Image (cartoon, rainbow, N blue to C red; front, side, top):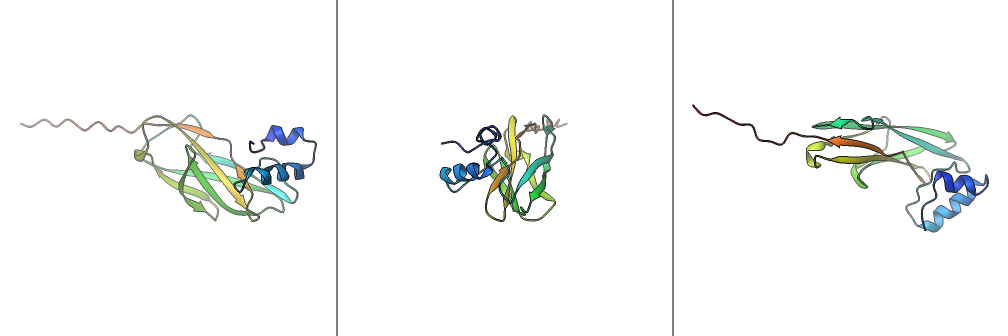
Length: 142
């Protein structure tokens, strides 16, 4: 069973509680993109920009907007599905990323905000290209 998405939740009437129930049936890691009773979180990666080329150590950052009575407990950044650093529990939500540890290729970043009840809300993915010149310099000996 898949985690509910915006389109799934919008198709099951206006009862966001149905999406909560579906999410609970999926398992303990519930990612919901619909507004829950009591509130939800809207997550956006603010840096780096989608489509950009990154090199060296950069800061990955996200903004979180709370709707209703939801509160942000933390934001976990993900790089190609794996955790990138530790969860950040206070705004501004950031994590340093040493891109030298990644291959020279396209990579996908996602920010996942967790509310005080443990529900998770993911940003849209941002794809960036890593390019670190790993060619050793040529040295002329005279």
